[in-house]
Image (cartoon, rainbow, N blue to C red):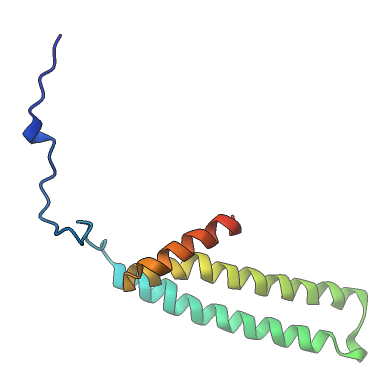
Length: 115
């Protein structure tokens, strides 16, 4: 059984200029940018403030005991997780919304080391 393919069927039919990739921003990009990048960052900042406050209170001399040491370590590592989550999730939509290619390359390099 022979298959005959017309070569004109295989050529792309997009009308993209050479400096564009031909892809359109996906649906709801503005909504995702606002919810994940803006609102998510504000929630993360609130969490960082709470963790810093917790660590400052629990490291006072009158509050030092083994349980509070573990809670302070939990607050520190939770802050690290919040910062990493920002650079993984929020930066994706910031880069896509602003179409910053250089920032995208730096973000992909960062992701290789994070994962």
